[in-house]
Image (cartoon, helix red, strand yellow):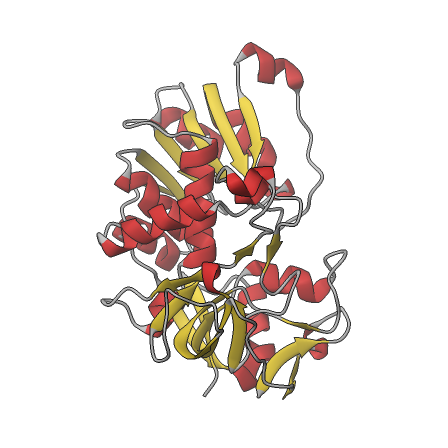
Amino acid sequence: MEAIRIHKHGGTEVLNYESVPTPKPKKNEVIIEIRAAAMNHLDIWVRRGVPGVPLPMILGSDGAGVITEVGDAVTKFKVNDEVCIQPLTYCNKCYYCKNGKQNYCHQIGILGETQDGTFCEYVVISESNVYPKPSHLSFQETAAFPLTAQTAYSMLVRRAKIEFGETVFVWGAGSGVGTMAIQIAKAKGCNVIATGGSEEKRNHAKNIGADFVLDHYNENIVSRVNEYTDGFGVDVIIEHVGEATWEKSMKILGKGGRLVTCGATTGPKVNIDIRHLFSKQQSIMGSTMGDSAAFDECLGLVLDRKIKPIIDRSFSFEKIRDAHDYLENSSQIGKVILLPK
């Protein structure tokens, strides 16, 4: 089969579209013919050099397709079932896994980072990571929501514990996490402030439910947010940018506010004035992916049509270097999709 694989870390030149052996399933695994896969910034980070990535590595965390083969112990699925993939992997044996907290498992992993991923014609994966494809979505739409929806949901609901009527601030409405965070926060009855770096991205934020949208390049975010909130600041901030936005985030976070971060696109080193932290009784939390129950709840929101995947554009597997350039330039609104054929 053909797959997108790296043998070393670096720029887009390390991305190879090459032939690899077609996998065979173990007794509790299925083989899925990938019809669509979705890109994430994780793919860029892995390509550049996330520590501990076993090489060579087939990239990709999200995917949707059709089951072509099942292991002897598989009971929930059969050949020709249309499915989507939950990209978090875990041992399913430890204390955390047995208590529904798989994202705390000591053997936690993500497809395309700790084991071969979805940017291939056929992927082998445990039955526990497979879910029926929502019938009202295309394969491309189905591939577009798992990692970002699961991440945004865990940030908002599991970590920040958002409540009806709270104000949520989302950086980067055009990103996959930003797009899902806006929709999930609105589905939970929150007021949403979002930012976009272009008029197109700001209109996108409004179209998916944001109540107040700002230009993070040309507007004074702190003064505009303070004006909008009558000086009280926001209750929750979804932060995945890092150094470039952190200082502004801390200035607009209100009393009792919760900042949740899942990434550091512009850099990991930030400054914190702990006097503001304790005097305002604020919380700063990290969040990575989410447990299987969070994925179930995200899938429920999709099935109820309260959130919808947003597709920006598609590339063929052969054009993977162009796709990485496109994503790195922050050109997208929603998800970038890869197609095997």
